Image (tube, rainbow, N blue to C red):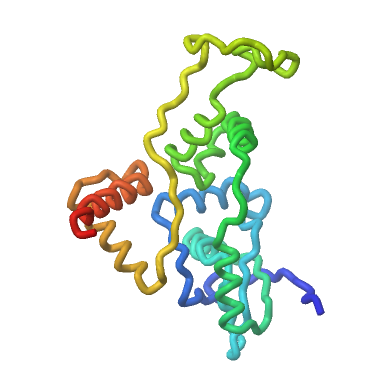
Amino acid sequence: MTTQIQIQYLPPGELQPNPWNTNKLDPAAEGKLENSILEFEDLGGLYKPIICRELPDGSLQILGGEHRTRAAGRMGIGKVPVINLGPVSDVRAKALGLADNGQYGQDDAAGLAALLEELKLEEGLLSILPYSDSDLAGIFASTAIDLDEIGMGEGDEATHGLPDPDTLPARPTITHELMRFKVPVEDRDRVEKLIQTVIKEKGFKTEQDSLVAAGMALVEICNAAKGQL
């Protein structure tokens, strides 16, 4: 039997975070989340409901949307949209939380770049999206060649000779690559503390891109471990 989902509006302070959520946001990402809520305030701000389950004592525990709930609390938002799934077992609740936090599929590079290029025309929109400057540079670099400019438009034959390299537009230099991986829950704090320690000791700057700083720290840790492997 399919559960009929209903949305109710509740104060964010009434919703309890779950103890196993491994999805964390750095201050920069938190700022982008708050800015996105403000940007779409005319559409309700929190347009994506908070997913909860009902505990035996009647309270609601967050399975998806903890960061949005916290942001709403910090911003003084009185009520947030909530979907109550009712009683859900721990196993299914954890699986649902991972599914909500996880990313399925892979963006088409050309389509994503075209969409982001369109959004660049609207002031401030790129700043609220979950992409760092290095992410955006890599996305735009993957589609930097204009086929019309080099004589390979839709009406051109594939038998054309290769274009003069000097006529090609310059491609932005990609200096970093985004990696995504998971660590065991019990090791997360230890890994995070080690990376933060290396960032501090090596003086890596974090104010511009915390992901780059974390990556540089990870490279340092790998280099230091070479002789021990």
